[in-house]
Image (cartoon, rainbow, N blue to C red; front, side, top):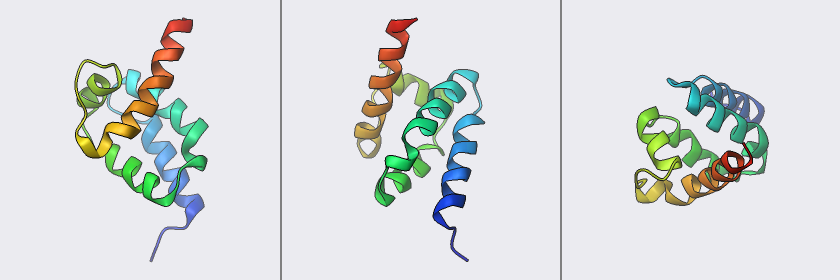
Length: 90
């Protein structure tokens, strides 16, 4: 049985908000609420794979303290740009 589009978005949002560390809950949860519906199927596949990565690695990549693997580089850049802009506002 395949997952329908609405169920997939719901699953991805839940996984985005229920991470291992609070910082990633806030970063990915907020980003997913704002952007998941705008992503193509391929981008959603990539985001789904990204959610399987370790939170500490993800935080390093988003915060610019580490370099993401090539497959995730453009997606991380999008998330990081928004994260950086929000951090400057605080």
